Image (cartoon, rainbow over all chains, first blue to last red; front, top):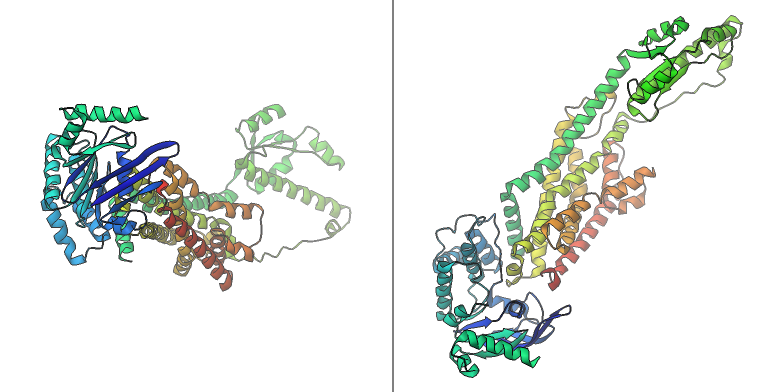
Length: 243
Length: 392
């Protein structure tokens, strides 16, 4: 369960996020949709506690990301945009490193890594060094790494970037599996079809603000557009008009 | 504590797997020094032994005007050969480097000698040419000795004791020990050690900070439920370990290399045995913490791997500054120098090599101040991971 309340964040003169609020409930997939530079990544980085908000608050399962950041981090698995692996370690070692850092008991680590390898179907290359992995392979290993401590909330920043059709499909199936297991999944994308196909709730962000937050059907209804892409453009233009 | 060791083990393993980088920092750094050193020392020893006994061929203008002098020079293994035709040609030949030194006997030499007035000879050399310095000195010494002999003969012929010419005799008593003389050459050793120590950890210091950020593995790492300060401490500890490993290799390489250098033949017996190796390891133990914290700190502030490399490489030179300043100003070792990292290690190590007594208090001050500074910088590094700017 992720709650975001009136978040503000500036980098110098650039106001990246200006009052973003939304809820992402457990057992559902929430999509953060918006054009490039809308403030999606900044919002997510506040959530996985890499940066601190200027004002406003956010919490993970009721733990504030600033004042209780360690407790909040225990409950999130984060896949930052362009997450890198350690090229000299095998995929299994990469995953096990995170398992150890998350303080999993030594005798459980092997089992835990094995089950996550099964879940993500990465057994074919898990014992190879990650140097030279394809983008799809890297994303899967980075995701496995993020999920190794079995977090209740999963934050994915543009996870399908650079993936081919097959890799995107299998990632989509995986995100559905995470939802079915009762997790809260929050992911960002600038690709409309992807969000429409997958998300229960959609939060459209433009220019650092929430343009609209609803289900796909709700958004179509409220904007009066049948096509989600038209609705997206409509919502963004509405934010632009109020400036 | 568990997190610390997890990070430490991962960084050690990660770096160990990267064979090419490992080779460059653990082999080339530590082994380059001893090999270069052995080469230079052997070359200079061979030269100094070879030169004194070799016959010097000296171009002379007007050799026929001074038969006696030529015979005298020959007895000192300086053979006169035909030189350039005149003074101008001689000067041109020396300037161009064709000859290192040319002797000219002016036409009135014999006449003035017979008259008992000072007879002139000209030694043409290039004082800026250090390669010819040795030959020039040999010629000049021979001429002075010849002049002295003539003077003695003249005084004797006039019934005056030659001792009149020598009111004072100077006896020099050299108290330097053979180990002390070697310290002149081996003084630069300590810099080789500092250099290989820093080289050993440089790439890891960069890789675990700037490299991690460039790779995009820093953000997922700090979003884990771990104490971020502990991550940094583990990385610094791994860097320090590789620095100590590189230093050990370098010390051992020198221990072996010194065995192949004919140092005794030039009167040098450096005190460089297994005891000194252990002493140096102990001295540089806190320096490895200081060095890795310093490099990690600098690398953390840079934006990319390349930028980090150029900045951190400059740190390789930093430890030489105090050593340089003290040796240029020829300051004598003092207690206050023990508070300066790198300088204190240098002075103590040189004393040990010279086989001079070492004040345990100096060692303690050097160890503690370097360690405290290292802990201080490590503390700053650990706090850095709280800054979000570092992650962007």
